[in-house]
Image 1 (cartoon, rainbow, N blue to C red):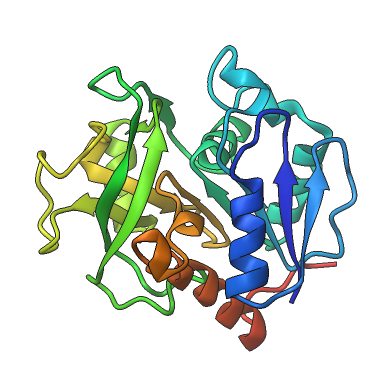
Image 2 (cartoon, rainbow, N blue to C red):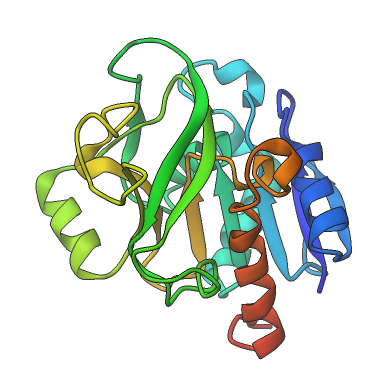
Length: 237
């Protein structure tokens, strides 16, 4: 299975994604430059963290118009697997592939630390190797990670099983104190209605081996690989 990692001007987690897939998942992976428009040879596309185009205007607002994003939108609409991490999540929101928006952290400060997430839905291509309700330890690093959407939208996301991860305590409790950025309903990750596009603010690629403090993030990539091998996720031609 072949993974592609998009590099925008300002990306800084593209190599982390690349190494997690190549060295830990042991799968073929290539970088995709933001001006490339042909991504048809890949089985999964990763939009990494960083500060695409310097986060001018809004985080992800300019990257949304990169030539590669036209291809990514088409790829996702045909059922291809897409993972947006941190800034990649912001790009997915700006592109309309996922609902909602990102606000500044309620502290108005950049936050970089390990946090805990509870898996709310393990029936997606990205979480099938995680138990429902399982707590994973994965770091965050963002200033604009405060997920916002209208109350009606949150109810719909929850009812549809689109809320994938919520910030929680180590014991799995959803509390305001465990919510590092003020995200609505403690949301840390969501997917689209079809379930083939995942956006999450925490960095699973930075938690892919014990030496880094946790290897829980590898479960996201391992789940994706398992879904691809099972033939569940296929891009329509």
